[in-house]
Amino acid sequence: MSALDETLASAHAEVRAEIARTDTKTALLLAFVGAALVAAWTAGRDLPMNPAAYVVGGAGMALLVGAAGLLLSAVRPNLRGGHGFPLWATLSPQQLYEALPVDLSADVVGLSRLAVAKFTRLRTAVDLTCAAGVLLAVAVVIVVGGAL
Image (cartoon, one colour):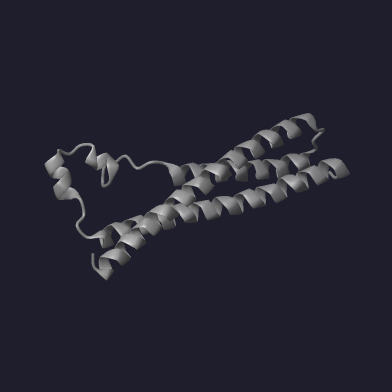
């Protein structure tokens, strides 16, 4: 195996590992967002809310729902069959052999783009979750402080 082949194989493995790490982080954040939604809903239902708290808390809840939507889109499988597993399931063994990329560089580029798209959605969902936390905390301060 040449040095270039080893470098490509290493890059391919690194990109696949980054996709797996991003999917794991996404799953953990999705569980956290779901728990935060349930906790905020339960707490909000039991507190004596005023209009300002409803507006601020509702905005926080909307951000959490938006974050959950982004996280779900980050892990949504692509079943259109353009490449990878869905396409492979429709091929004969000979067609599969012919369809597999001989050059790993094209696969590394494609997987890298997928990893960047997943990571971008994850980063945005984290930002939305943090903003939602701030809004929900402000809503609690409004309720506890009795502001109108």
